[in-house]
View 1 (cartoon, rainbow, N blue to C red):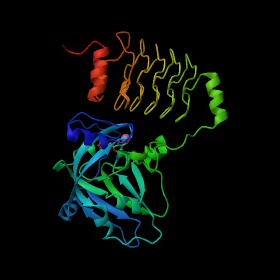
View 2: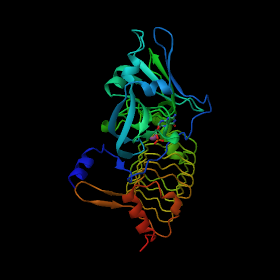
View 3: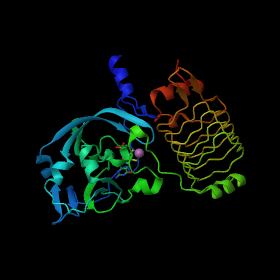
View 4: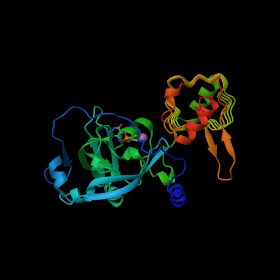
Length: 348
Ligand SMILES: Nc1nc2c(c(=O)[nH]1)N[C@H]1C(S)=C(S)[C@@H](COP(=O)(O)O)O[C@H]1N2
Ligand SMILES: [Mo]
């Protein structure tokens, strides 16, 4: 009761807690093949590169921190117990060039996944080179054996399978920051999820008129309240797009990326979301009757929301909605309960 309310205060805006014991794997699922023995290298300093083997990292002073994890796709996980070496401890053994201001964390993964922070910020936030998680070695799917953990930033700043740390004079966009327009600061308390929209107004106006967004990058576009029945948006990039109160009957969003999009009270009757990425999407109050959601991704998505004043906004879902049960497992308990009840599948 008491601890529950404190937990509520620890939840940044727009986030929801995952079910106890559930930790989704997001992004890459495994490291790239490489030497059997892991090591971590810091490059870009004034002298030679400095390398530590996993054994050497384990022999250094370890710190343990309990922290909350916040993913940009709106799920959060409380009380993760992270153990490892402070970034600051490693940097103490390296001489940085005076002009180095940024630090890039690079993964041993097929796409050389990376993310960048200001050195000063990374130290101040207490960045940990994590070797253990909840008392056990970091599981491989979650970035073991060596993963960086940046407390107080969305989880995309915490690179899995950390292999290299580079000191840089200039900021370098990370993989998600470049690929998906994720915000470079990533402070969950300021909801810094995305960079400013990329498309200019004239292009947007033309596309709206044509009602064909297929394949276009329109992230963060504002279309609330608009009449867009029959919209074609196959394979469109619509992260963070706003469709609140819009009419989108029979719209086709198949294979589109709609993560963190907003559809509050939208009319989505007969809309198609086949193989659509709906991670973190807000579908509260949307009319989803006759919608086809086969193969969509629903981690962090919501269908039902209770406002602080107690007002409940519920999506309209019934037997005419195609929403296979196996897609529902990544939903938070509250959302899962709501959707199952609506689909008449709650086991009673
Ligand atoms: N190497 C690597 N690190 C990564 C990613 C990735 O795809 N590859 N995804 C990031 C994102 S977007 C998130 S939310 C977290 C997910 O970590 P998890 O799979 O342990 O939950 O890892 C971050 N670090
Ligand atoms: Mo993420």
